[in-house]
Length: 485
Image (cartoon, rainbow, N blue to C red; front, side):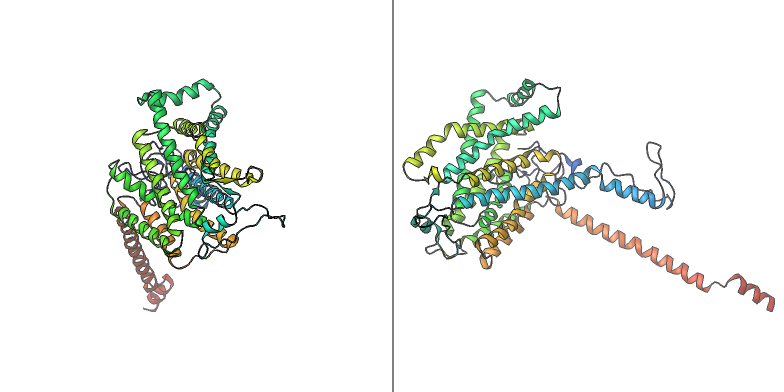
């Protein structure tokens, strides 16, 4: 949901103005894109930095600027220029971006593990006061069989999806409050009219717009449902690693549907991600193991996320902050109004199991709040930082989740599982490479060679001058020689 379809890259987080590849955005199941900046806002640009010294300016003298002021000289000048570079607009964006990456990682990991915890709760036994927790070792244990055997108290993935999606209704109210607090001159009707007018200007009628919202709501719920259902079978780390492959689906669909530029290294990244998915699919074998089904669900969730993002760009186009907030809130309201009969029907028919007197509200509320935080960060924090840092939160969450799985459940990451996760991470970073990445490498090598050649004559000149000074006799020696003659 961006004003720009560029994908954040490693060398240039916003890409060049010629690059047209989809950004990645944080959703309830992953990371989504928000309104983007232009090329001048990339990390590589430094609009606030001072002008460098010209080659003719001697060291230790003042340098005149365009506005007639002079910069301080000596150590004080160096300290001031260094302080200015560390406090520039680009530097502040980077600092805030690191904090956003940490927050996205924490909220993403917390929401996923909270949902996973829902499947581990058991009803109280007659002889014990504490709930029984089934040991979590999915390598040798079929979780589906165990949960059926022990009569799970909470077995409702669709109800979880419905409940978590309802919280997206808070998007527009939070955006509304923030606009009122920052721009006090605006009235409430002006903010609402502005958001609606943006859609009307694109030719959307009320019926057409609500139809599009309903279709996106179904796609959103289906994607989240597959993600949450896969957590019933796999570890949270496995599911998060598989979902990180959505960046490859976004690129492939953008290439086909949005006619984005073909980039060979990104096709290679897609192949690497697919190889990692295959290794995770067969890490426990295929005989009597539910792992393959869980991998298919998680990968389908990643594909659904990619379809959602590309179709939003195709149907809605560039979106403002108000449009994004209004669209998310409408998805939440449509979900709450239209899909509750389906959740009730699954409960009454016994397809889903949940005991209202023992409903795990803390874990359910934690998952909903953390998912909402991840969505808000993914769609609105781009106003203060580069969306590259938001995208990184999706892959940095994998090692953090792995550490939690090791501590909480004694999970082991080795063999095909570890290799699959590494390949997915490599493919994830390769997708973020820009289409003209060879130019960056060539430019870097050229700068290194130029620095080497420029440093070599200075050293040779310094050595020649030092040798001449050693061979040159002092004035006293010359005088002595003259007197002797």
